[in-house]
Image (cartoon, rainbow, N blue to C red):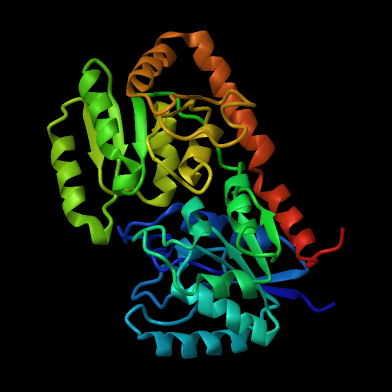
Length: 368
């Protein structure tokens, strides 16, 4: 029986996933596509190719067990990228292509796949993308109507994205929750950090609020992992300077993907200050898998807090953010209950094996 072929397209900023010495900032989309590609490869009747840009240095050891296929150089113009991507598709002949994160290239790829009779599965990486707005620049995507018309399946992460899209298209929309691989999850014994914050250094993620929290609690130890974003260097420099003046805070501007779990396991509470995301970010799910209670200032996506009691929602009130951190660290019983709730939530909602199986059924790429 001929194997079905799926191509997983990695974001352009995924270099650190495949190059051991790269300190280039990567996002949750890269981590999620890596997990999806790995899980797809566990199916004996599916062959999975991982499409990545032709980075200068690719570490084959770091990329295992993925089957990597390089597409184009990042410096190529759009026409050359399209030509090289076309050649790559012809070489691999996929029946379906998975791609995450809104770009102009995503829109053009949806049309290409429709003409080539390939199932193009587009995954929204952020709630704001469902409105046809780029996540990074917050600018309008002019080609967005093409994407939602010609994609075979539109993947959102929650009801927010689903409701937004239903006003714009009659195309098929499917809620697919991000997945985790729990096989390597283990908790560290020593927890020197009372609170941890991890995100790219972007204004809408509000790292300055975590710095304010640290400044007000000088008796506690804080850890901030805050990689810079190329188009926001001045903002990063401002945050880095402020962090250097906060004596009870350790500031790291980059941590490799495999190191994130290590720092999470050394921490007691995970703090998130973003004003909007694409459901709970990957790093929040990773924190939950280690039993860290989630202290959320502005976000309260479904189930984690309200159903499973895996965190505390602070209703966009800083005084509650500050107060609840102290309560979590002081009240061992409450901490233990919320810690268990966080673990229960990710095990129930974000199991990569179960979620991928449902998606493949939905795409009719495996039989029920």
